[in-house]
Each structure stands twice: as structure tokens, then as C-alpha cells.
Length: 121
Image 1 (cartoon, rainbow, N blue to C red):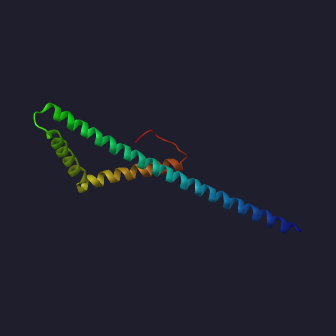
Image 2 (tube, helix red, strand yellow; image 1 turned 30 degrees about the horizontal axis):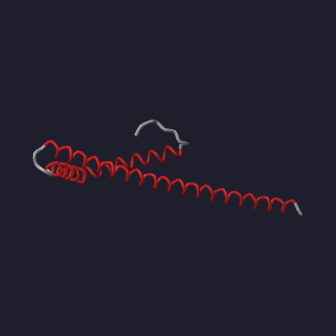
């Protein structure tokens, strides 16, 4: 085999190995993303359940101390409706969405920088 044939074979092997390495790194990133999404969904589900049970507990606690049945549920419903209206107003929603976008952007930048974390949220 000639010198150039050997170089061509070695270069072909090198390209194949690099392509396989790139494919493995893409698979790792996809798995990491999917596991992060699954964890986030699980945490959101747990948070929602915690909030629901806490609100039911507070409503029952209010019902225990007032002479009227179900007034605690009404009070909690009014508070929840007030919070819903407060957080769905356009400028409030944009504020929270922008804040979340900034946090996600900082997280991505930190991962690209090698995982350096400045400790801020």
C-alpha cells in the first residue's frame, strides 16, 4: 500500500470515529434534555398537588373557626381568583415570562461556560 493510501485510510477512520463521537454527544444531550423535562414535570405536578392540599387544609381550618359551613372554601376561592386575575394581567404575565427567559438564558450560558455558577437565581 502506498503512503497516500495509508493516510487516506487513517483519515477515513478518523472521520468515522469523530462522527460516532458527535452522534453519541447528541444522544447524551437529548437524553439529558428529556430527563430534565421529565423531572420538571414531576416537580410541577408535586407542587400543584401540594398547593391544592394546602388550600383544602386552610379552607377546612377556616370552616372550623367560623359558624358557617363552607365559608372557608369561599374565602380560599376568592383569594385564588384574585391571584389568578393578578397574575394573568398582561404586564404581569410578561414580567414573569421575561424573568423565566432570563433565568433559562443564564442557565444555558453557565452550561456553555463549563458549569460555573455565580450562586444567583
